[in-house]
Image (cartoon, helix red, strand yellow):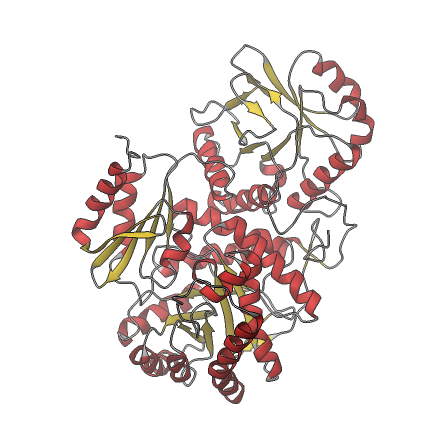
Length: 600
């Protein structure tokens, strides 16, 4: 299958056109640019300027503000003036949904406009019938009519555009023709890009965001491939939208953003956290710095992997029965910790995991197949062997006691690339033995960083491979605390949609559109529900992306009016305008009424 990047086994940047955003260069070989977004009310000029300054001082290079109406768009003029008067030159961006006339006001005051193709011109439709080709073309002409004035004004003023689709806010028109799919997300953006290109305007970037990291990665991959096929290449703004808060949000962002950066894709990034926006900046800066350390100028030979890069399929593997748990086949990936842990499926002690029937899973490195063959006679073996040794082990393949451990990087590859090549070699040689993704110091790019930065690397390594369908056992060995490392491993599996072990929260980072105190609400909802298993709750500030991004959620908590909450069951709104002080109790009652509540 044709790849979406220059190399999947080492990091070679995909060349593209450079975009200028108020003097900050994106793409075209420029360093990765870090962005964030304010969560103040845009019409509160003083608060917005203060937060812009805090973000700039933290190292944020481009700062976005919402412009939800004409009044907010006009406020951008004073915000920009006061921010510049304070001595800052960081470009400002206006985030536009629904109102083209608001974009036309905002473009006069800021260096960049973000538009969402899902709601810039398209309206919700009442008819359920599909479009004929003629009707579809007629709608595209309406888009061209409304979008062209903004493009021309951007061209006159030297402004930039971001054409940013969100999985949760595709138009009905796109969904009816292409489905709620990665292809639909890409086509929605490309429709607008073709208008820009027809008008000889090229100062724009793309984004394709989703709260589902697997969908997000697959969509950016598809977009890169489609650009190559259509003969153009524009910079990509990377982000996992509505990632949430705390460790889980950082893990999802690292695996989505970092995994694509390791593939040489992505030119500017934003880590979305339901926290103070300043907290986003160090996470993004770490990811940008990390990829600089592994950047290569020349692709290594690309193996035939047999992977569909644009839709998920798990690598086929045989089952190894470890009594207490099974590895491979259709079973969820097991978690093993380097020491005793109540959260792990097994714990390694003295290079062996003790299984429930008294057998031991031996973990060892092998330089020749002879010792491996002898050990297999004694029981289950997790064998770390080099790619070069694999052909000599062919007579042992598909032994139901054998698990392979992906080796550390060698030959100029990073750990993700090495594991991909290892899995490809197993496939080429006919082995379906399970693969253990073991992340420790031997796979770190930077061994001098702290625990949170190491966790970013673990999320990139495990998340990238899990999205590819590779991995039957995972372990994280970065903290020295087996219990904590097991929690990290389980969180990465959940972020990659590979295994559920706790409640999950899809939460927006908040902005000037947010209709209630979302950070306070998220903390209280987590405290009330974190003991639940196999349940997903969406916490959204408003309806711009809310119901759509909550497509994967069981229940939703969405701002419907100032200080008022709407509750959702799946995609259906079941209660409206609940006072915020009562809404969490009502959410708990809703979960209980569905029989999905358990006491702590």
